[in-house]
Length: 117
Image (tube, rainbow, N blue to C red; front, side, top):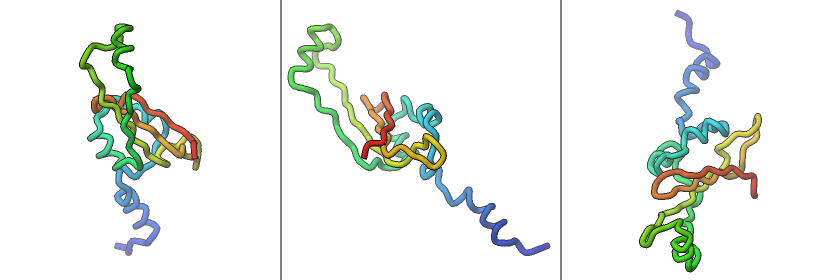
């Protein structure tokens, strides 16, 4: 049996050196993988977000929505936005600076990609 050469060893071990959450991904697979998923699932897969923000409802919003028949009294959504950087690839060697995942009541309801700085 011949000794294993370094390039062969590197090729064999490389897939084990990257955790799934450290891999970058394309836009469409990312959308399908995380749309409708829970916060816990997203955090297990992608890790902790770079930043989290809680949505603030404008003053008098409940009353206006109730008048238009779009909400009922006492109904309240828990909305939170999570931000990740450099996770989504849109072209060879090019990544969106920011991915924003919006959660409403622990369900990912919106995903936005941006190159804002």
